[in-house]
Length: 216
Image (tube, one colour):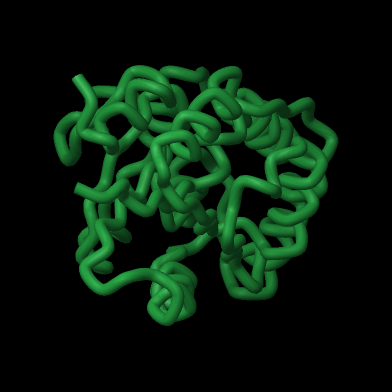
């Protein structure tokens, strides 16, 4: 059987930024006079689209202009936080490459920020396509994933087996809507118990890739 085509998520999957995201939200909560949230609460409740979660933790927008302001505030604060690649990211990308997998990125992060992030971390060369969002809204990436698959349709053989690897329930939702397989990784934004309820889940990025490759 030919190697699968791997569609990688970025934030929380290849990029280890969960602590940065939590620190960002707690700074925003403090600015509004609220109480900070802990990592366990974050991983037990965070979800995409992000707006209902923001309401839950007291970062409330009353109209679209206010929501756009919150989105820009988040990325301004988040941009100051230290972030790094998942320690196993390069190992997993090299494993996929050696297994004959073609690889692309599909992300809810705005395209220019995504490309800059990947270049800064030195991993751009692994990917055929980098497909990010056109906004800062933190909403669904399904439309962008559909665009990516249409773009790839002329360059991959008919019947290619696609596998999306991510760290969130939304990645499973996107994979289901696309009709592709999904493997989740428990190192990111969602607690493992949430992920295991919906899809095969690896404890680490390498574990997730091994599941995608059908390796024991």
